[in-house]
Every structure is written in C-alpha cells, then in structure tokens.
Amino acid sequence: MQTVEAVTADVIEDGVAGRIAMFGERKRATVAADRYFYLQTITSPTNHRVQAVGREMIMMASYSYLGLIGHPRIDEAAKRAIDDYGTGAGGVRLLTGTTDLHERLEARVAEFGKREDAAVYSSGYMTNLAIITGFFGPKDLILMDKLDHASIVDGCLLSGAKWRTYRHNDMEHLEKLLSGAQGASESILVVADSVFSMDGDVMDLPGTAALCRKYGARLMVDEAHSIGSLGATGHGIEEHFDMVGSVDLKMGTFSKAIPSVGGYVAATHEIVDFLRHNSRPFIFSAALPPAQTAAALTALDVIEDEPERVQLLHRQQQRYREGLEALGYDTMDSTTCVVPVLIGDEGKCMDLTRELFDRGVFVCPIVHPAVPRGTDRLRTTIMATHTDEDIEIARDAFAQAGRKLGLIG
Ligand SMILES: Cc1ncc(COP(=O)(O)O)c(C=O)c1O
Image (cartoon, rainbow, N blue to C red):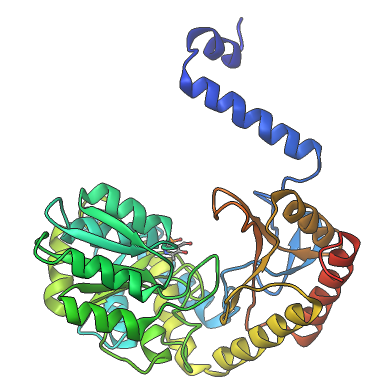
C-alpha cells in the first residue's frame, strides 16, 4: 500500500507542492542548525516564569502584560461560567449565541472605554475584519499606518475598499494622502494600531485625530497592545494622551493584557448596533464561549481594582529598556511594554535567540518577512509580574550573549 505522502506526491505536482517542498527544506535546515524557535511547548500557566522546553525559563515574550493569567478571581469567574452555562454558546451572536454574560461584557467594555456601547467578537482578528468589512466597500478609501497589524490589512482586502499606507506615524504623509483624496471617495477611514506590536512605539493620536477632523475622515484605533497597559490606569490610548472621545471606532482584544480570547469594538450605540446586524463575523461565526466571556468581564474589574499592576508594568518596562540601552542595544522608539531589540540580520537574530534560550530566557525572533529586511529583531515584552531579579537575569544574559556574538562592546 502506498503511503499518503507518496500518493499526494504522485498525483499532484503543482505550485502548491513546490511551495510545500521549499518550506520543508528551509524548516529542516533551520532545525538541523538548532535555530528553530517556533511552536515551543509551554507546560505551565504563562507568567514571568514558565516551564518551557522541559525547564523553568524567564518569559520575555508574552502578551500577558499585566500577568493576569491564572489570577484567582478571573479563574473562578470562568469556572463559575462553565457551571452556569456549560462550555459553548451554541450559536452565533445574532441568533442563539447571546447570553446575559455577553450583554454584561459589552456593557462593561463600553463603560471601560467610555463609550455608549460595545460589541464583542470571538477574536481580535475577526473584530478588525468585522468593522472594516461592515462599514467600508469599493466606493471608500482606507488609509492605514504602514506598520498596522495584518488583520487590518486583511480587513481592507476583504472589504474591496481602495486602501493606501502612510509612512509609519508620519503625519505629513498622512495629510498629503488625505488632501489628495478629497472628493474621490464616499467615506474615508484612517486606521492605526495604538501601540505598534513589533516596534513598541505609540501612535500619534493628537496628530491623527486633528487630521481626521480637518479632512472629514473617520478614525479607528486598534488597542490590542494598549488596553490594560497604556495610560496611567491602563485605559488605553485616549487616557495616555488625555483625549477621551477622540476616536470614532475603538477596537481591542481580550487576548493580551486581558487573559482570555475575543475582541471588541466600542463606539456610539448607533455604530455598534449597525455592526451587530451587519458584520459577518457576528452573524456567521460562533459566539465567544461563556468561560472566556466571564474571564474578560472579570479581568476588566481586576484592572480597575488593582491599579498597582499598571504602575508596576510602567516601572519595570522602563527599567528593562534602560538596562538594554545601557548595554548598547537599540530598542528602537519603544516607550511601552513591547521592547524590540534591533539586530538587523536574520542569522544574528537567531544566534542571539539560541544564546538567550541556553541561558534560560524565552524570547521571540522576528525576521523578514514579518518585518522589513534589515530590521530583524527580538520582540521582547515586559509583564507587571517581572521582578527586579528577573530583569537583572535577563539583562545579564543579553550582556553575555551579545558580547559573545560581537553585537555589543
Ligand atoms: C495589533 C493587533 N491587532 C489585532 C490582533 C488580533 O488579535 P487576536 O489575537 O485577539 O485575534 C493582534 C494579535 O496579535 C494584534 O497584535
């Protein structure tokens, strides 16, 4: 009997087979060189320390910025939701998938985000698709920051709208595109990440909001990396700039500082109600499960009830970043808990990752095509639960590994 592999290879010899073969070769070479760092197995809850690849490591790459995974109140709420509702919502939101937990979460998100209303989806990725395809089509124009998340790009592609990118955080370029677009489209959307996920810098909200007002464009902001982490009390980009009410469409995720899964859009009641009835992920994809809904709901309470977590995060991110810069590393324009370490070369990036792993520090290499060629980097992150000792150990590992590889003096 032929194996499945043999049958497939015999029958289909097309472009897909070629791409699979090329990928396989590249992966085998990377594994053979001991430079494959993806899909690492973690066998504990993710916090500042994790059990990974069979031992304890300092986690320097998690999205769980506030260290809330495993928080007793949040875990308890999720368990209670399973007792009360079971494990699935049993349908899409529009039909049979809306429980009172979903309604409470939406009201809580609206309150947290200082908006009239909010709708929740089963992932942040879906939320971006939902908002963009829900409102925008071929007669409209979308202008997005060059470094916006892939889900925004995918939303634009799926919507059929015309779209262009402006240079990263470059208000002159955005204004040029906005002024050139006047009268050519029915609606214009400007969309940006609030904290850029690979660079760790913050969008220019004052500049972007002023241009949107001047040129009659709507403003959408993706708060995936700012909700819980940015602003004195973790309420995000509008708090950070003291500009509450300046964003038309605020979206975010429950998968980063909030230890669950799902996404939300917060806006006026009219906008949100339109999306509840006109966005495909709300209508054609299953509702968030009860446990995850309850976890997100309770996490928002915890963020407000334990403000010291955000303060600690801000203290530790600065301490960590300054430590790396003092060693001679380039952390780009990061001012947040996302701290890239620019290396500029894929091979060296992988070598540094290996050295750090061997010293018990879990980091993630981010290389082309995820970032432009020549800007290969480690994407490291800080959590509120990182101790001074964790940061010292990580910095020492960066010092030893960087000197060994000739990356720093
Ligand atoms: C900026 C940004 N937006 C959206 C998403 C998608 O969110 P989720 O993982 O909840 O689908 C991500 C995920 O990493 C992100 O970084």
